[in-house]
Length: 250
Image (cartoon, rainbow, N blue to C red; front, side, top):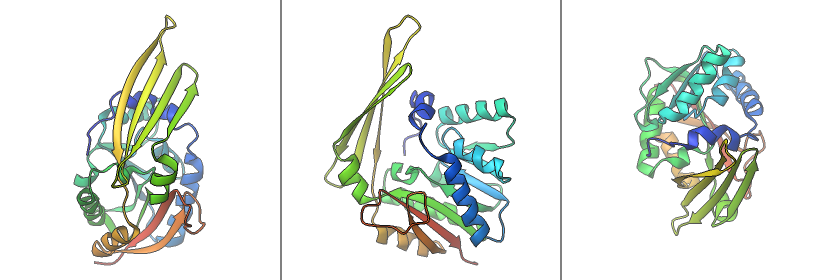
């Protein structure tokens, strides 16, 4: 898995400005209260710049944010100190998650698992999550669906025009249904010129049966599969599959 998103960290929040973090946190809080007897420590795995971490913290949880990109974490730390947030941040890979103790809830969303390099890395991540989730604790995560890779991302291009910044998002769909994403950022400088920065990454897709089997192997029961960030059931046109799982007693 790639270790950094470089310059992308500077633009991440602008690109994610429409992500409903408050809605997500409220939904996850509802799942936690419904399904888990222990609900104090929440790990935000692949936390990025800490937006969801902050929302969960403001709901009363002890939050640990984990991300492989130090650049992303630097942005999260700046928010932490500016807003006086008592959130811990760790620079770690999902495949090598190593906590001081077990967490009550581990959350990994916004297709972060699709950014892993292989199904083997997904298996390693599930193994580490299982190791550090307490008995009865929850694992909440999402993945992009095959429908999204083929029908929405595909070989399509998107343009985002923001104040002082333009992003051209180009996708390339491969025969294995993975998508290579190239982002060209054009940032306005103080003299009116635009400077270009480019980032590229790959997202892979997993079969539902493969995910279910890995969860079973690692001691999780599936409590629900939902359409995007909702409590509606999955459908053929779902772009995001949200899983809510519980760690069985060892």
